[in-house]
Amino acid sequence: MEKEVKKTGIARMLELAFMKRGLIIAAGSLSFLSTLMSFIPYVSIYFIIREFVPHISNLSGINSSYMIKWGLIAGGSAVGAVLLNFIALMCSHLAAFKTQYKLKLDFTRHLASLPMGFHTQNSTGKLRKVVDSNIEQLEGFVAHNFPDIVGSFTAPIAAVVLMFAFDWRMGLACLVPIILSFAVQIVAMSGKKAAHFMNKYQTSLEDMNNAAVEYVRGISVVKAFNQTIFSFRKFHDTIKHYGDWVLAYTKSFKTPMVLFMTIISNVYLFVVPVAIWISGGVTDYNAFALSVIFYLIFALSLTGPFVKIMYVSQKGRQIADGIERMDRVLDTQPLKIAESPKETDDFNIEFNNVSFSYNDGEQDNTIENINFKARQGQITALVGPSGGGKTTIASLIPRFYDVLAGYITIGGTDIRDMSEDYLNGIVSFVFQDVFLFKQSVSDNILAGNKTASLDDVVAAAKAAQCHEFISALPNKYNTIIGTENIHLSGGERQRLVIARAILKNAPIIVLDEATAFADPENEQKIQEALSHLIKDKTVIIIAHRLSTIKNANNIVVIDEGKINSQGTHKQLIEKAGLYKKLWEQYTGAQGWQIAGGESNV
Image 1 (cartoon, one colour):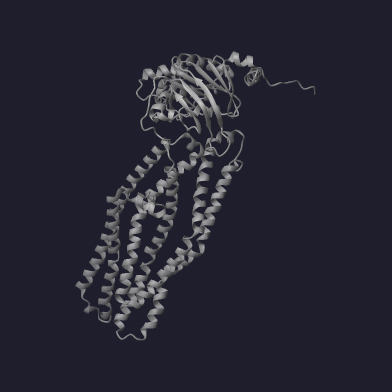
Image 2: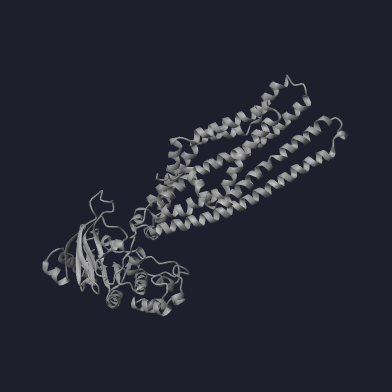
C-alpha cells in the first residue's frame, strides 16, 4: 500500500477548513446563492432601462406595473442576497470556532506529548505564535474568507454569463481587462521570489515574538541597569528586521498592485472604444444605447468581486504558510510508547553506559558512558562544575529525552518500557527554574495531587517550611499569586514547588538546585523537611551548595559529561581529586568578604 502523501499549501488549508464539512458546505452553498442573487438587480435594471428608453419622449407610455415588478425584484433580491450571506457567515463562523477549538486542543495536547528536548530547541514565542496567530488566522479564513472565496469565484462566472448575454462584443471588452488584471497578479504572486518573501516574513515575525517574550521576562534587568529598548539590542534589531521585511514585501507588490487596481477599476475604458467602434453598423439605436448603458453600469460592479479575489488569494498564501509551520510541530513525533507497559515495586535507579547528545550524535556527546546507581531510601547527589551535564543526567530519569546509547532502569525495568503517565507518576522533578501558575496558593500546591484535601496541602506546606509565610498572605491559601501586588521571593516560590512535590508523594524525587534561593535559615529547614521526605524514596539532588549534600549516601562527581568519581563525602575528600578541590573552593568562598579600607587623603 502506498503511503498517503500529506497535503500542503492551499490544499492543506482547505482540508482543515472542511473539518466541519456540513457547516462548510452549507456556508458555501448559501454564499453561492447569495452571489447569484446579488446580480439580479443588474438584470432588473436592464429591463427597467429597456422599458424606459423607448418612452423617454413620452413618459405616459411607460408600463408602470412592469417597472414596479422589476423594481421589487431588484429590491427583494438585494435583501435576499444580504440575508443569505448573513446565514452563510453564521454557518462559517460556527465551523470556524469548532475548528479552532479542536486545532488548539490537538496542538496543545501534542505539545504536551513531545519530549523536553523539543521545547528547549523551540522557543516559547515561536510556539505561542502558532497557537495565537497561525491557528487564529485559519479561524479567520474559515469564518470570513471561505464564503468570500465561494462568492468571489461565483461572481466571475455569473459576470461572464451576463457579459455575453446581451452583446458578445462588449462582453468581450469587459472580459479582456479582467484577464489582464489577473495575469498581473498571477505573475506577481507566484514563483520562488514570492514564496521566499512570505517565508522570510513569517520567520521575522516569529523572531520578533521570541525577542518580545525574552524582553518582557528580562524587564527587571533592563530597568535595574537603566537601559532602554534600544539597548536591548535583540528586541530592537528583530523589530527593525521585521519592519524591513514587511516594507520590502509591500514594495514588491507596488507595481502589480497599481496595475491590477488601475485595470480592474476602469473596465469601462475598454467598453467605450468598442461601443464607438461598433456604433457605425448599428441599425437599432435604442437597443444599442440600452446595451451600452447596461455595460457601463455593469463594468462598475466588477471591481468589488475581483478585488476580493485578489485579497483572498493573498491572505490564503499567508495562512497556508502559517499552517505549514503548525504542521511541522504536529509532524514531530513524541517519544515511542511501549506496546505492553511495565510497572515496578522497586525504585532503585541505575544508569548503564548511558550516552546522550542534544544533536542526535552529530556532535560530541553531552554525557558519555554514565554508570551509577541511586538506591531507594537514600540520597544520591550530582555535583561538578557548571555545564558538566548534571541537569542533563537528571532530565533523562523522567524521560524528558531518550538516551542515545545505553539504558536507564527503575527497579530493573527499562524506563522506555514504562508508560508516560506511570513514569511521570512515580517521579517528582523540582526544576531549578521555578514556575507557578497564576492561581491560588493551594491550587499551585495541588498541582502535585489534584485529589488531595486542604489538610494534605497544609501538611505539605508545613513540611516544605512555607506554611508560615502563606499564613501571612491576605487570603492565606486562597491568595492568588501574581495579583493585587502579591509577589513571592525566589526562596518562597522554591519552597512552594517543593511542597507540590511533597504532596505528590512520588517514590522518586529529583531536586535540581532546590535550595538555590534559600537563605541559611530556610536552607536548614528545607533540609530537615527533606530528611523526612526521603524515607523509602529514591532522592537525587543536583547542588552547587556542597553543604546541602555533605551527608548524601552517594555523591557522583560529573565533569565534562563523564563521571569523575563517586562515593561518600569522606571517601571523596580522602581521594584528593576534583571533589576535594570543589569542596575547598566552596568552603573558602563561605569566608569571602568585600575588603575595605580608609582613605589616607
